Length: 419
Length: 210
Image (cartoon, rainbow over the protein chains, first blue to last red):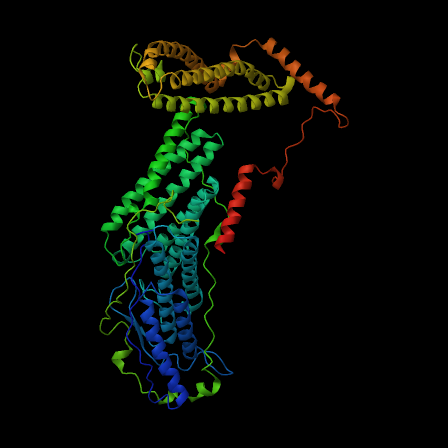
């Protein structure tokens, strides 16, 4: 689906040497630190490329996180927080707030920030698969769906299990702000649902099921948009326009298929009411697409209104509406109700729910003996000016690899992913 | 002469403009007429069952149901109208060939005349169809100008038919008490085909998504 998904830029970070001079005096402790440095650099490198292989990213991320575990949790009988947790200062930019980093002396902050980047990589990888193929195969569609569910799973895990454990509460508009994380989670879930819906349309499933799926997708985009209410408009306007246009588009879809269901039940008057609503929502989506294009804010600009999947809906709805109006005039003579018929929801949540994520246990390099060899008391004191968060020079944005987009329209009927 | 007049222009000697279009339009109308007939048949069945249920105890319900016979008659007229539509199809499609040669062109005036006659008949039927439409959309109009005694007699006939059918059945008591309305949710076997299809599709998607 060329130009279909909006994506914010990934987070940039200052290099970390893991050079803990007084603290690491033995071979194994120094090895852990140098491995951490190497793995971190390698991970950051591949995360800037959405064309990378999913398995590679998975493996490198697992290795880094398993090494980092020793800085989070004590590797001895007592357990609890690691003595190394606050020893290094990590600096990260945020997806919405440009090049000024926030910094914390907290390995948990490092963990969460890197995990957000991994989740963002999954969403960009999904967008790349969707964009570069005229007609994605079933396997490719499944990969898009899987990536988006994984991303959603990471966001929800971070929000519910990790962010609360940070020492410093997150600033508004940063990626640790739970409203921002929630928005990312809802967006990823909604986009995964889009793939399922596209498949249902391509396979010509029953109209009532498609209507329910579309309604649910629309609601998810609505939830994502709602999460960002109250955030600084300069940061979120563009992103919110994207979420709103998707909400309106899928609402148009839901009403269109609901109208067809009603017509099949000879409820022509209600069908006409639904189809008129569908036309209204479709026009709203078109208008929002224009506003989205012009809105200022971070992120790559998608062009969903140019995609065949979007363009096809308008004429289909208008044709169905004309047919219903003709039949009503000739056969049914129903009054068109003022009130809009309710859309039905089916229990379809399982189709695109966030995938449960498990972060790896500590690497085998960690054991109580090695842990004991880290001498935190030898760490030099932190200079005062470094303790202030948000200070420090800007970090340039990550140079992300481009996603190649397919130029032409798909050849299949619906313009969606093929079964 | 609404739709057909517009379609064919109506001047003698003129070639029927775009017969393909004409055929297409007629097919659409035929489809609509079929749909209308099915819809009216469904309504007839519904009203008949209401009439039987209400019986002689509920006169008003019965009367609304019985007027359905009038609809039956009108529906026969619709059937005729559809036959006419088919005739026009044939009249246009066969003699006025798409690869016309000179002999066939000579046949044109006569066939156009035939088509015009058919069109006039169809226009008449169209008026009847409009009557039906009004009758359906104004059920109140039904109750007032019908002979109630006649209707009562017809209803008693219907009820008698029903009783006779039941007496012939072996076992099972004959009763005019209807079963009480269930208060619980209907079980799976009462699901319509559409619901079952939707459930199958959903199961398929769930399998793919996991």
